[in-house]
Image 1 (cartoon, one colour):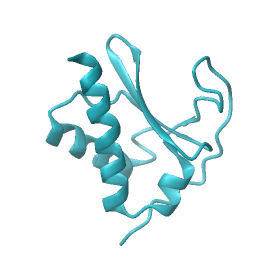
Image 2: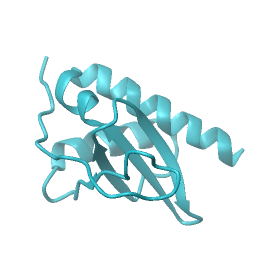
Image 3: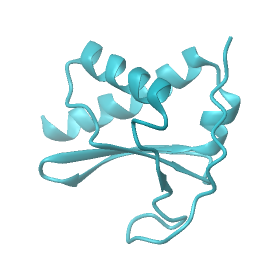
Length: 103
């Protein structure tokens, strides 16, 4: 099983993110991760997150940042230690929870 290794230290602060929002992971620099997120979002029939972040906190969360943009925040332990299947399940879980908020 492959691992996602992303050397991205988290930083900054923002209300609602006690550990900071993390570092933005642009699609052109993290194409494999974005492909995974797009694949999961399409399979679930949900809107694709507009931005993906890595943060140092060992947790993941999907949030409605703006009415027209969702964001996915993934903890570095998820990105560095989980297999692709485990990461896919974590992304699916977060996007499914976000979909429930819209219902």
